[in-house]
Amino acid sequence: RPVRATLCEALRSDHVALVGVSEEQGECLDRMWAECAEFFAKTAEERAESAGALREAYPSKHHASQSRAYGYAEVKTDAGSSNSFLDTRLRLKQNLQLELQPVMDAPPTDFASAAAASQQVLLDVGFAALSAAAESLGMKVSEVAPLVDFPERLAPGATCATVHRFAHYGGDMGVDPVDAESSVTFQAHTDGTWFTVIPCAAVPGLEVFASAEHGWVSPERDAAATGRMVMVLTGEFLQLLSDGEYTAALHRVVRPLGDAPRLSAPLLMRGSAASGFSGGARDGTLVARILKSDEEVAVASPPNGAGGAPQKAPTDAKALMLRRIAEARAYKVEQELNKSGESRTQ
Image 1 (cartoon, one colour):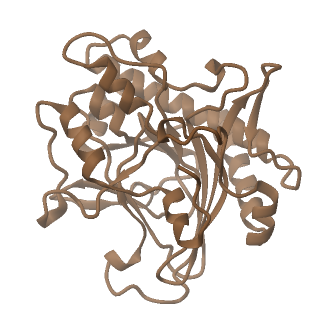
Image 2 (cartoon, helix red, strand yellow; image 1 turned 120 degrees about the vertical axis):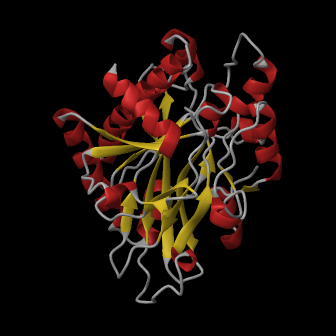
């Protein structure tokens, strides 16, 4: 109980918590990092050939709520470096075996098993955090479990909404950033998730906006975190569930210094598209509409102008969520691909 209370306190106040994993779980993450490094050691052409371009699992469905994109994408930055992304999702085959998409025949041959095992570790961490948050709100774990899109609950042939994204952020190409803002390689945004669960990387880069007083903080750097620690960032669905008691983490990625690239492997823990909330003032239809979203909503700049302090949620958190989704600038990797003519079909 004390551990859960401490976790919830960190999520409320800082929007991020650092969680240690067991030795066995850490070994899964170590294996994942090794396979991730091997994949990104390839040339861009080899990566694209191995994983295929970013594509839809359900190409006949164009609405964002049915989006289940997976595959490889590369984005050039204004600084001249390149950011690369591999989105993976689990699919339940007709024989009831889970399969990692995209299917890659070329090396690293162990990528699929390593990615699937690490995804389970991150899902376990994320669901433990959701269970703790739900209990702090006076809810039962059994009430929130159906709201999470778990791979093992998929219908045969279905692809999971939860996405495990592998990212490679290029270094600064020897160019010193003019200021802190010019070093940002992935702009400030919040995620349409319950939680975004991110293993701490060897090269720090993720920053979370903690408060007007503390500004942007680096959990990886500030905690001297190891690869066997995991960051848990609050998402928009949790903000909705809690009526603003928990607010979504505003976060960004800054470029690595020097030539060393940064690898990252966030798990975006999505909501079940078939679920809605019940009870109280929560509108099941409205919630279901938001839960179906596969969006990562971004803000052009931190809310509240000077100081960039995230706004406190109003009493009607649902109205806030809709306003943010309607007004905020969508910042998805897939939309960034419009620059290179490879964006997915919406």
